[in-house]
View (cartoon, helix red, strand yellow):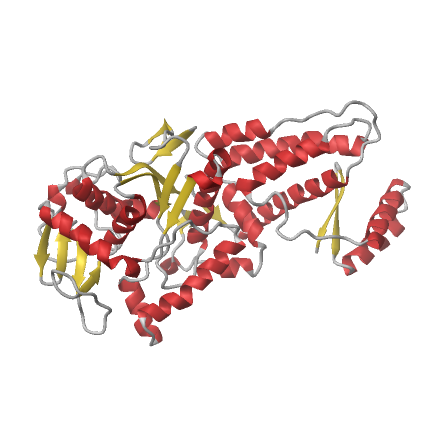
Length: 458
């Protein structure tokens, strides 16, 4: 099995620290606002990675951790705007993420730590860094001296002198280096604060993930993941903190980053006015369609979002669901020994190649195209249960092959569908159209394809 290591910038053989077990951490959201498409893309990408590991190694052998950032400048500013506490804001927003992620079919992490619940570990980690000579104190907080960590910049591939000031870099003219970052912010009036050896204050953004991975996994684990926008400075700073405290070979063995969501070839952002929440999208499209849309593209590649892309995903997913329904209803008239159609291994080959969901989907559509004529012919007896079993196993990580809620049709609707098929075959198009209209009134849409008629819920 091969994965692309963002730090090495190459595809490598995946070898877990402990054979047959995987420990994985993915940076979660800062819960100051609703989940947007970028959050959904990252959540679904790593949900599939996690599920595929469970598929290969067993659910009990995979530990998946993703955090909530529930204290930082954005949280404080939004809470002030709304006239509530930071804790109340988190309590309000976190259930929205849980609702939207559940709708996307994202499994809950084994552990979902919050920054505010790990202040003790954060303080202990800063103490270790202080002992190692990595910190210094200014009037507004405790800082990490990046010049003391020679590997800083290797993840993002930048040299210290070339590093640009990115999002959430602390601006302070008194810092030793412009890219030094804060570990502990001293208390300001009206802000949440905790006691520490350096004075009352709160954690910096980067330190929380280093502390929480240490709490759950210890000094080393297999995979650290997150969105490409976190590569610098957040993940770069995490490496500096954890390796500074525990040694060069500590922290994550492999790094994975998912690509951006773009709109009209520009990064999605509120400032550009091309920002979409998951709630906005779910108002128009089934969350399973959105999950399918994300997985049509390899997780490392950007997605150029549009309504057209969602419509294509909707049509593709309906083809899959229609195929599964036809397969379940199929009864061969042939008495020949059943033909076993094997394709699960080909899908696995794609997934073993850095979780290539687009290649895996290509295999599934190819198989559908080869089986549909057999469903029409009925003279070839193939083992439909074998095919269905493979699809069910693959859906353990895809999460969209079977509709979320199975839609049953009544006997009289089945009869009308059969009558329409007979009318079409006898070229009685007037009767065929009348039955189609009647079915539409009952919430059933028919689609005539080259491989037969499929139905779906209106």
